Image (cartoon, rainbow, N blue to C red; front, side):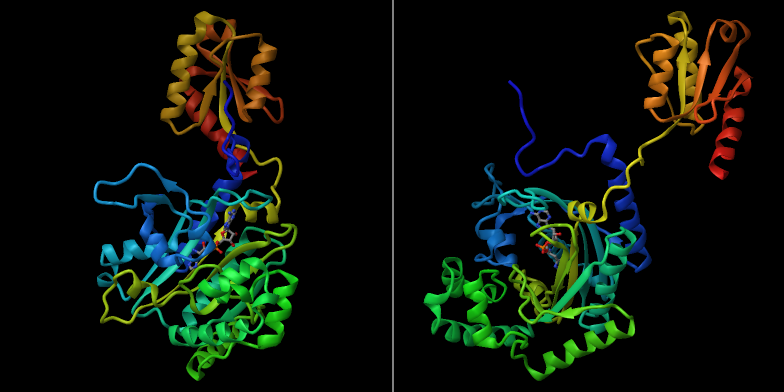
Length: 432
Ligand code: HAM
């Protein structure tokens, strides 16, 4: 029987791993340079954590949660694979009392997320995110919104994502959201039959989602109800807050567009929300998204007496790779490929391999022997910088022939000097 990778998931093969490593190491470096620290949480959690935080009526919870069938001892409803990172980070923040450690916890994470979606280009069931969250009593500053947005744009620039487009909006405070919600429900009720089937359902459960429905009919209704370019009716404080965020973005010369109907699919957002799109991705063109979620801590049982502020984003790594294009030719190299021309020389070549590795020189060999031509072919395929050959003469003289794989030059070196000789050569290659 032959098995295939599950639909909507990908193997990341050795030829591609360098792109991933580069992305991850750049992400770590840049996040740390903004003062963010890495956090790792489990890839599955109590299913209610997601229901509670993302919203029981959100598509992610309603249609896409991948539940685990094995149930926990005290967990009646069981676990689900995480569809995103924010809920887990907030759970961990509260559980580990991170608020006692510092007034603002600046955290980042890199890892797989799972959503039972219908797979298509850029939409997977297992995908990877680089996520960033800033949470704490110091977290309610418009400058923090600007820091988060500038970090997201900085990362995308560093990843070579061409012309990323930042769209922002404000949903206002929790109270604003409640007021807008009942106002919208009233208004949409007058046009209920003109809405698409999905929105007729959404309208009852989460009226905000009607605002960013792509269906032409719904767009028409939305334009009638709130006007094409008009912002949501926010309170004065919320408007002021949003204006401060925008002013800081302008000061930092970060280009953005206000997208008055951008609402996002997860329930936890208040105030600033944003989405970053890039070309070449087809219909799934969001490379990243995020926003403020000040009230989520309360909702997940945080310290009620403390006012927390929280904001973050996540970038989709598969979409970044699609948008940035892969830099062909990057693949893993190895310093040395050891070759012996006779099976009886193998103990010596194997000992050499070990000496090289113990001296921080990366090295490998063939374990099946073969002709010199085929072994040199293997060295080439392994992207070796040097081939170290133990032939008849070398075996007799206790030497090694060192062949530079790019220039073709060859030199005989005493076995006793091979480590220092090779280290010199590698240093010269690295400097050139
Ligand atoms: P999200 O918009 O659901 O937000 O996902 C963020 C990014 O993850 C998307 O813009 C996209 O690039 C990528 N993504 C999402 N679903 C898929 C999929 N099925 N296949 C491939 N890529 C996908 C969140 O996840 C929030 N937790 C972001 C956040 C952090 N908000 C505050 N803090």
